[in-house]
Structures are given as C-alpha cells and as structure tokens.
Amino acid sequence: MTVRDAEASEIHQLAKIWFDGWRDAHARLLPEELAWLRTLESFAQRLMAALDRVRVAGPADAPIGFCLTKGSEVNQLYVCSQARGSGVAAALILDAERRLSAEGVPKAWLACAIGNERAARFYEKRGWIRTGTVIEQLEAGSGTFPLEVWRYEKPLR
Ligand SMILES: CC(C)(COP(=O)(O)OP(=O)(O)OC[C@H]1O[C@@H](n2cnc3c(N)ncnc32)[C@H](O)[C@@H]1OP(=O)(O)O)[C@@H](O)C(=O)NCCC(=O)NCCS
Image (cartoon, rainbow, N blue to C red; front, side):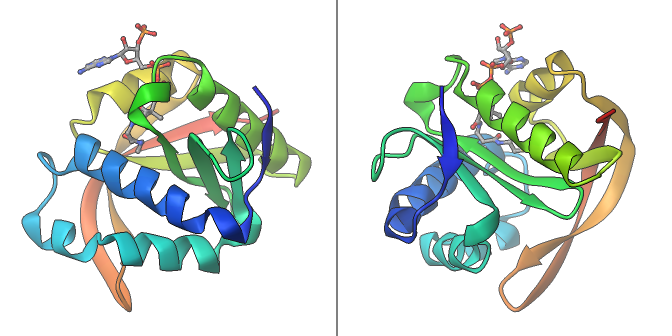
C-alpha cells in the first residue's frame, strides 16, 4: 500500500472520511458540544491548513484513509469504513512513524478517545504504549476544547 502526500483537490473526500470516521468512533463517547463543532466544513478547513503534513492512502482523487502529524504527535488517523481491517491504517501509521523518526523525533505520541477500543487495540498491536489519562486541549473552532483522553507513546529509535 503506497502512502503519498495529499493533494488540495482531495480535501473534500478526506474531510468526508474524517467526518464519517469521527461519528463512527467518537459520537457515542464524547460530549455533544464537541460533536456540534465537528462539522464537515471544520474538518475541510483543518485539512487545508495542515495540507503539507497530510499523508494519504488510495488512488489520486479517491483516497481511502489519511494520517496527519503535528510536531511529535500523530494527530489524526482515519480510514474509511470499507478499508478498515485491511492493513491501510498500518501502512499510514508506519509512514508517520518513519517520517517523524527521520525528522529526529525520539518518541511519538498520540491521543485516543477514552473508550475507542478499536483504535486502542490497533495502536497497541503496533507497539504503542498507553501511558495514562491526560487532559488534552483539542482544536475546536477558533479555540480549544478540553477533553480527557488516553495518551499513547512509542519510542522511534
Ligand atoms: C482506528 C483505525 C484507524 C484502525 O484501523 P483498522 O484498519 O480498523 O485497524 P485493524 O483492523 O488493523 O485493528 C483493529 C483491531 O481492533 C479489533 N477490534 C475491532 N473492534 C473492536 C472493539 N470494539 N474492541 C476491541 N477491539 C476491537 C480488531 O479485531 C483488530 O484487532 P485484531 O487485528 O487483533 O483482530 C480505524 O478503525 C478507523 O479509522 N477508525 C475510525 C477513526 C478512529 O477511531 N481513528 C482513531 C482516532 S484516535
């Protein structure tokens, strides 16, 4: 599975993957106020702002998943429902780990919604370690939204 840079022409499709995946994984777990802020448009704006850090899997103009890094963080990882369980997510996170390592990051981290058991299982089988529960200030609209999350870390070398 090839992982490549995202193109601006793919923003809408990527935002849809993020929007649908957010609802699948998070809507039942997270506060309703946060769900109101997680609109398709908000995801498109965040993807556009971070475009040079977005890596995708799938054919040109038909992406099936993406991963976004930010500093030493794997900030977002979403795969469309049809591609889950296929190894696409593994290819995306491996690419992110390699890129962070190449940038000199010794230890990567990520936040996972408490109770997102599928994601937790995925990270743990990829060697990520849950280090505890922390309050993260999530990007939300023009500000932030505090949320208690599971923190995962992985040494990269
Ligand atoms: C999280 C995500 C990227 C993982 O990719 P994936 O292709 O689904 O991952 P995999 O299928 O390789 O691994 C998931 C594992 O969880 C298991 N699993 C599935 N549902 C589960 C559940 N309810 N509880 C516990 N484990 C579960 C699967 O059986 C699999 O484990 P196995 O390989 O030992 O059988 C993908 O599911 C996704 O995009 N989800 C929606 C968005 C999301 O949650 N993103 C992460 C935000 S932190």
